[in-house]
Length: 127
Image 1 (cartoon, rainbow, N blue to C red):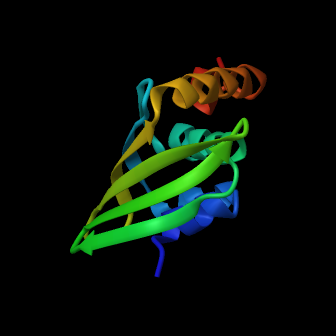
Image 2 (cartoon, rainbow, N blue to C red; image 1 turned 45 degrees about the vertical axis):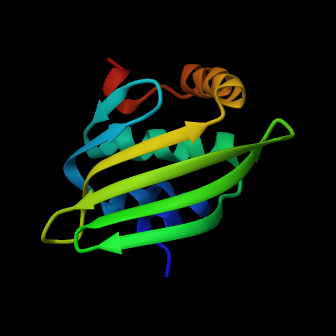
């Protein structure tokens, strides 16, 4: 059974994504680190829109740790990813790390993500 966070990301359900996150969640993307439920849930929603459908290839769960391996298509090329989650005693994600490859495709995806962030800034960056 897929991680609830991955299922929420696949469905592009920002409210459900936020519901899986602890208030002080930390997210490590291929580009930068982010902290706090509002920013991380918004960012994961944008990432889901950029990456498109995630095809889960393998999952590993050990206690409070959950690692999901997936493939997705971006700009006509396959992108491989890993989402590693660590949860607290209440089952909320307290830390997540996203890794993507290959580098050439990742660079294109990062550029698209930058455009998405410019159009829809993180809540914590709006003043």
